[in-house]
Image (cartoon, rainbow, N blue to C red; front, side):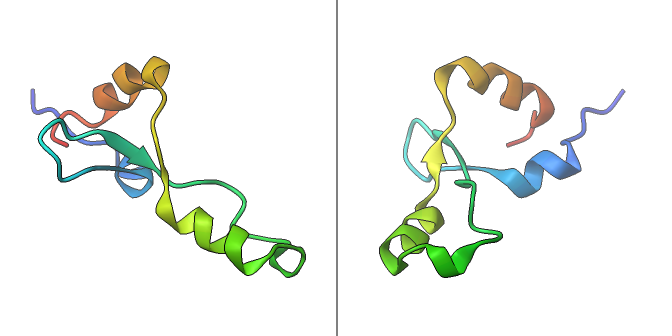
Length: 66
């Protein structure tokens, strides 16, 4: 049987270009209530953050080809 990537996970996670290839995820809270947030705060949401060590195994299981 073919291994397939989860379509929803493909949109939420990406791998960095470095040798180790860490998994990165988008930061939350950039979808609503943006008038109350500063420009600096909104720009920080774009950078993303690494997936926690406890969740790396779970993410890799839904993204076998990433």
